[in-house]
Image (tube, rainbow, N blue to C red; front, side, top):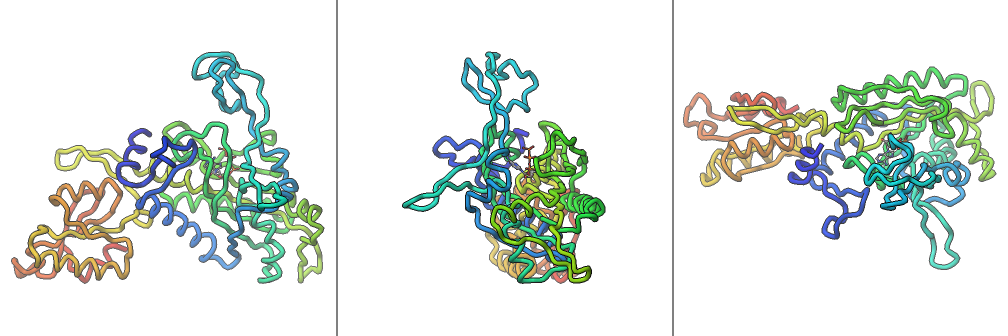
Length: 427
Ligand code: ATP
């Protein structure tokens, strides 16, 4: 894990939040490459769950919502974790994460009695007569409050879903394990509305969809864990957690839950607004059930990094590289002139770079250091292809005119390819 964290910092993926002031626990900033990887994960998700389907609608709701939303959803009263404090060193822990509930894991001191700690960040909205609100702890409520708007605007037939990607905030008692447990997170959630008597079958379909997603991320060690009734969230009739083997142990990557009609029914009561669905075919009115696959962006990103982090030996030298699937890699290909002081090589390399950039916006030009170093730098950030323009490209060996070397990240193998064939080879 330390190696991944250090690579992330060194190569501009993830930095500690507010680092120059000593950091703010549970917050992380994303550098150029981490942002690119994160955006690739989010775009892939949106493509798979929204644009490639006909039954999905997007929404982008405000992070700040009326305080009443959180009362009605049950978060004000129940969105809490058990907190214990060490009587000696005063450190605080989540009681359900401790192996020994009596002794402090840091100093061995006696732990006090657990008390429930609400994880929502409270804030005040307005300058005068300020009202209490919260930074949303899940994106889902912004979907439920837009259920009627979506139905009125698009008249979808059941089953249909509303998807959202956005920030959520949880004042975790002990944020830890790099970006695994953070206080400011990003969720990708679908609320999928179904006829109440069809929820079990729809749940199984979503389980399959989630398996497909996990495959697209290239993750191998994922376990499906049926959550016992006593451990489920207050709204859930069934939850299956998808857990990944992180270096610090098997832990939740994402969750799939049936939220029943809990949220819509409560919002109907709380707001007085009709949130029933009218079925044109059967002429029935009812509150749909909801299947919710809930994906954390950070946990997906961390799993992808863990899965792809590889150490091997190439050409007799140890190397570290990220074996990222090419559709996720921040950079698809790096284009090099063999020598940076030969204008004819540089000009040709820039020509190839500009040509490829039209189809692959995430290609880069690099003429820094020798070729070996450039390869290693690209390997370390997971770039699947390197393209080198040399004197043969310009026709030194006439039979190689217009060809370049294309190097494969994983095997280190190089082959000669015609410039016209590059677009196909990079796909
Ligand atoms: P945990 O048990 O690990 O605290 P949870 O069961 O509270 O997680 P959910 O409420 O099901 O999590 O949230 C849905 C998803 O949001 C999680 O599967 C995870 O991917 C992500 N998530 C939740 N809390 C955090 C957090 N503090 N940091 C990063 N991601 C999170």
